[in-house]
Length: 88
Image (cartoon, rainbow, N blue to C red; front, side, top):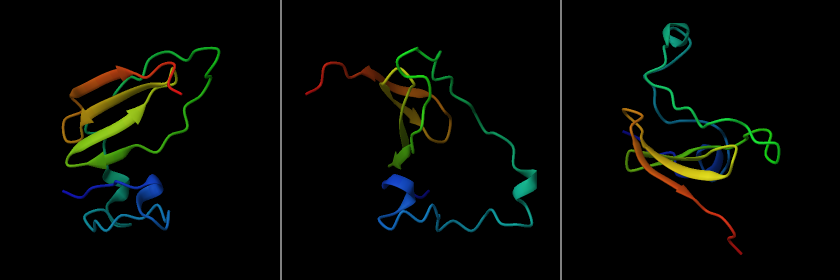
């Protein structure tokens, strides 16, 4: 288990992982372990461009409607689904 606690993977934003289980010889055989539906797109926020973070086995992300969610990174099971609105 490895965390991904920084935007784009590490403080240098290299998009790189220290994991070595996946390489050029086996990447084509990867299959999704789970998916998560972030909901419909709203007219105000028509796209989602976010780098999820993983800390202590929890994946934190945002939806196109600016909801923050937390999932068990291994199973995709929802842990937290909170809307942060009117935050100054």
